[in-house]
Length: 277
Length: 171
Image 1 (tube, rainbow over the protein chains, first blue to last red):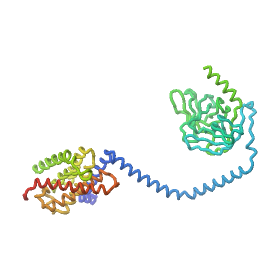
Image 2: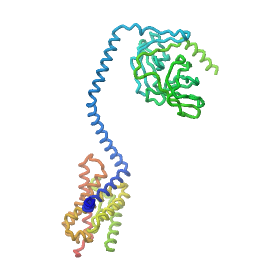
Image 3: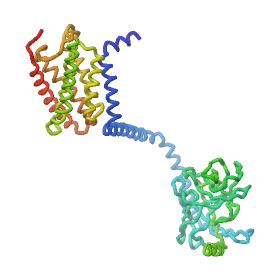
């Protein structure tokens, strides 16, 4: 301590210089726009360059993991190739729902392209117009709803996934039957959606199932997900409910396109309402 | 003692006023701009305590900055100047000198020492000043040229000032 003090007094010129100069430097950087900008820029460049270097090194560390992943993918692709090569007669058939008085007609399709990480996600299916798919049909999977057919070509169709900022599906709560519209909501987690426009007075239970209401393209009672969070208030009189989606969007393989045989008749009837109104 | 204080106060006022109203408008393109106000810090008594010297240098710099709209640039340069001055005095003067209240003005000190004193410290001040102003090493040679030309300009003006107030050795 004594020695430190001795050093400080002996070289006080230098230490005082550091203190005063540091203060002046601080003033310069704080109060002059140009100097501030360039100081921040320099540090940003430094940080950026450092990160780039570190990432370069890091990528080497993960090489073996990447290799394993690629090998795995290769194996999977080979398997798929085999399946494509062999004629698949099963996937061509349609599943007829006789319980619902054959209002709905299901067409099995395979997902050929899928994304979950965009703000607006789309899915491509390997069935198209020749298989009976039309624009605006609903798409479901074995465990839940997937989306709405957006565009159709002869042999392919694109689906506007539920993970899309514009997608709205009429949905109802299992117990109270209160209905609202199902959206992706916050739009970054492929496993979580948002049920909107449920009135405030409805009692919502955590874990309660959310099903399709049957008011839109989907048959009623198709599972959408489970309520995981209830208390989010979206405005004055409506609840925003977080829903854990039951469809595994990240590994979607086979889906069913729902052909509502009576949809034309219904829309025609409903359009008359609008005309009168 | 009181005389020294008054002299320095008057010097401060005159030099800063000259700097901000006259020398601010003088320059050889953008290459040479004189800053003779540092003569005030140069002429502070030799035996002034370090801390006081730094405080005075800093506030002088801030005062000039206020008129130049470059808060901190001149202050930083003046603080650097104060440091250079302390080192220079410690190296070149004997102990009994740098504990006296001698004003290091030509006439009190030999011309050669005075000239070296002024030019070395001015160079140091200008180097810091222009580096702080440019704030990058981009076109460094341009900055160096500015420093050197401004340094010559300032030293000439300071020597002219000193000539004005030159008196034969009083000691």
